Image (cartoon, rainbow, N blue to C red):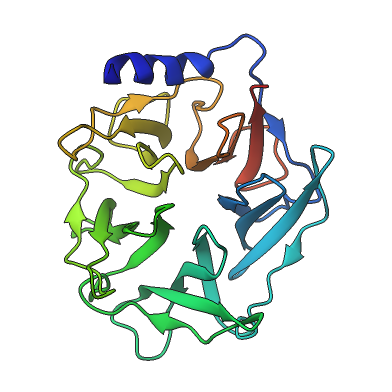
Length: 274
């Protein structure tokens, strides 16, 4: 059954009419744009833009087109670096990486902010054991709020994917490595689909088409993960694909890539399978 589902997922990406479309100048610039999240109804995308520093933007999707991107104002983000946002299902909690914040555990830590009375609260460091003296980044909260996937730097200056589970008292347990996904090379940008069963990530260590590629695993009955499967073309190219999200209905996906023909650096592309 699991193998059949994986084959179905991969087959979708080989449909003859499955073509990538650059989101255009309303979203992409000569800097780097990294897709982070979608609203559950697909009406808005969130992404990190790197132009000197890291800031979070959103774009409203209207009639299938992304409108001019706007800076997300959390109320405390003007002079700090933040990125890789992941929202709770009710959009009342945001998880993100804060880079070189005062009082942090490492160069980058994972923080959260809560929406109270329509105002985002000050960042709260998730603390130990999620954060450590190394760098943690690119959080992804599960739809049920019970799992937090993120990236942690390794001793060889690469990164691997970890998961921490929420305990009954609200604390997070000791993170465990997602061994099915990780290699001695680099893995990044975990995205757990709202179905809670499908994990996408970028890797340069598994067999790919070039550089970083996007892979998918399925959750096994025992709680582990299946062997990663490369999504293939046209999602992956001979260039780098480093972040990937899929809509809740599975009809649209977004990928950040430095493939040829973009505006510069990493651009965001969309695939439509309706």
